[in-house]
Image 1 (cartoon, rainbow, N blue to C red):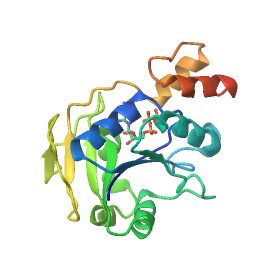
Image 2: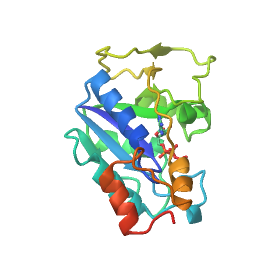
Image 3: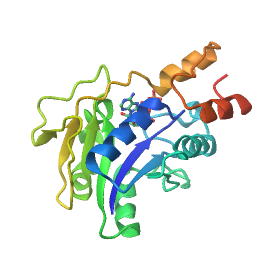
Length: 205
Ligand code: ATP
């Protein structure tokens, strides 16, 4: 199988995440896209983050309409943060003979050298780096293949780094949280079932 992985805090999941996943699934003809909510991301203080249970539930609601999308408990089920490299090692054991494509926004990827065991990570997975408004791809990265809309790219065992510059979804979880805190309407940024869940559980008030 060809499996794309989108890790994140998803606090909450929004249409930028879904657009990135759909673009990658289409462009690389992946069999599945696994959304992996982090337990507590190593760079954020746990107290500020919505419980893994709620974040997982919102991801499950948002991904339910899409055949290829899965919600993975592999990180949120643990009692301690799990790094991407650990998740990838585990994915290789769980899905032997599969190829992996790790989706990251340009904001995340620009600090890739600070990720745990990042060199090992490049042995375990290819990357699909999607453009995020305000964050350009670093020009000191070499061996990055620029992929344009509509290209049907296959990836296999030898890890590669792809950059998809066309995505232009200007939305973030931070912006959604602060809009909700001020009583604003965020219906254009998140799927309706997720919005209903947020209201029901009084999240981000
Ligand atoms: P926060 O505002 O809380 O930092 P976020 O909106 O960045 O949250 P995350 O859950 O941290 O969301 O993101 C998970 C992954 O999705 C990251 O690789 C991030 O770069 C990517 N991503 C998030 N939003 C977008 C977007 N609008 N366009 C492209 N990629 C995105």
